[in-house]
Length: 255
Image (cartoon, rainbow, N blue to C red):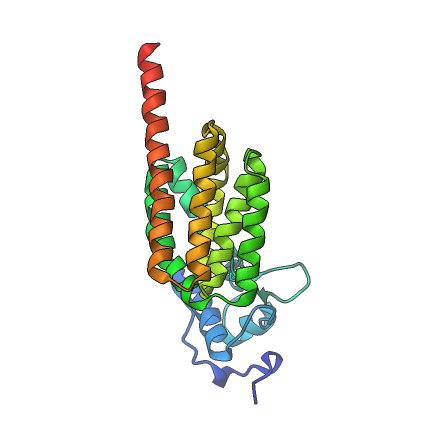
């Protein structure tokens, strides 16, 4: 029978003296170890600050600081007067790291596009082997909505993001969903801008056709075909990225 977190005893988790400047780090390690030992899942409550303080032998402010650090990583959620709970993870934290890397020039849009390309080519192959009837229905509905919104830049871009998330879900690996959500924050504006720059009907139609080719391969259960279609999709986006940059450079030189 699973132990009740409210009845946690000192013997349940080996303790070490918490002294020196690493007390907060030790409490963080203790809590993470406890989560693993108790097999806690989203929604489960941690012991109170008072309980942890007594068990580990540190002050409540130290426990509170450790809790805040863990909340910053997205592992737990804190509320005044309530015990901290385990929260489901999403792509927000990773997205902030990627966004900051682009902001300070440590990476650029091209770097992120290359990373997404390698990630999604493998992801879509899994989607082609693991997709469920519900996944197929969702992809078809999204494609139909995308076709109707083909010339509505912002709406189409939003549906495009949902399309890639649906493929991540079809892959049957929750880490893909987290990572695609992380990239969403960086690419939301650029995808919208990219659709607006595709001024001709043929350019816009090409984007839709690439999405349709991906979907057809996934539905057909063809992992190699799905990977090729996804590769073509990113190659088109990559070519558009560079052609736009070269065009802007030429305009600046003429000025």
